[in-house]
Image (cartoon, rainbow, N blue to C red; front, top):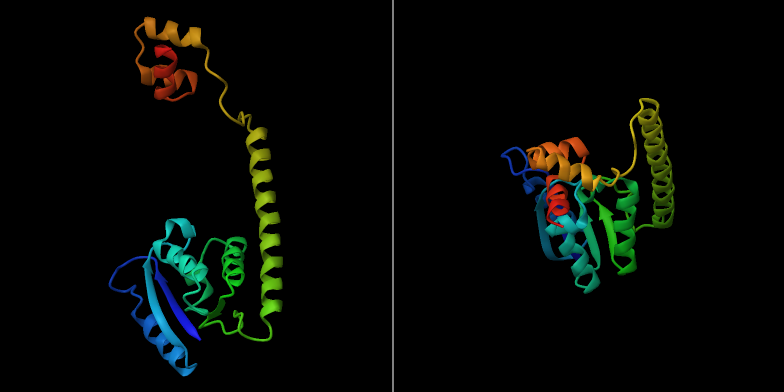
Length: 193
């Protein structure tokens, strides 16, 4: 099998490098008799989306092009720290490209073994539960804000006449913006119209 190795650390400080990951992943791939086609080393937060991460973006591009058969990574949190829903989406994208995936330190997180379907089902259940918890937290936060009298939603459209009057009275764009709860750019647009 053709193997793509993906490694990631959050920063490039001397105590955080991909060296250990790369060495052990290469050794593991050789023991499996996998041909290593490329090693992608990424230095950024795992909380960023695939679109914001050049390395992960390349993984998906290579998967679509069928340039490898299995993605080998150190652990699931090296692949993504965006939560189980997003991580499941990434693994599903690999599956859709007919690419297998395997976590070196978490042998049970793998699409290579007989439990692949069980792992994906479990992760899907966790993703659903994460979505429910997120929704509950958002609702609780909105309710708390309402109880404190905060107005929710987009700011109301500014009163054009009030803005013009404030400007004629010598107020700066910043003062008008603060008074009306809109941006200076929006104040300028209203005054220019």
